[in-house]
Image 1 (cartoon, rainbow, N blue to C red):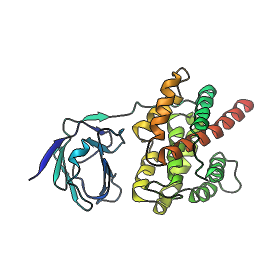
Image 2: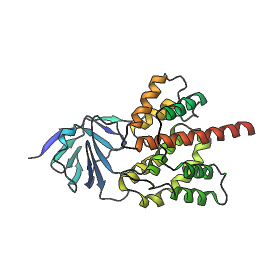
Image 3: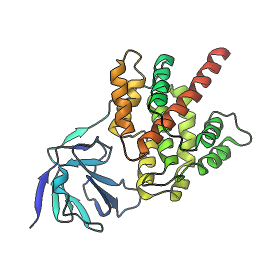
Length: 283
């Protein structure tokens, strides 16, 4: 007997029309579904208690227990069949981040964020030197061809570290969130363009799930919790309690993923602060 359940909400990039794929991983409260067609986005079925991701469908986790790895998945007419269950998304509320008007993070907010990193005692993911090299290459301060320098630096980061989403990848997602949503386009656009060219060829170094989130990040699509934090950082008048909540929500993501993304945000903002200072001096 097939159970049909209604999804209360879904991410804005969820596209199930004609979707075909298979369940590749199961975790408490989440199912990862890989598409058969290369180039299509992975789908994620999350428990409704999770924050959204751009390609997630939210349901009650109690309805996911019958699903198994390898189950076939197909989307038709507003319904997603996942093994023995059918998810109805026709009336789902769509989560869509507010379109960002990127502006630089105020120095006062940047300092408040740095203080939180210290008080929460974020563990080092041992990537500071590699990330600093990448940021230097993106900023044009490296030696030789800029694109070659960016590619070489990225190769020392992508896939580095253990886990479902390795530390290096999580750091990169944090960096891209700052570049897309909290940096003047004059500064960020050339950097994003370089990363967009270099990153796809390195995704074979990491896990399929992490590669999925990196592809989204290059496009400027991030999880709900990460969007809320970075958008909070742009607001100099945001109450401190709101910043702490947004910070802690990201920190609670995964075993180390949230902490590593926060580290990427911190490193990127510090580098950009130096860059902004240089531009002001030139002006």
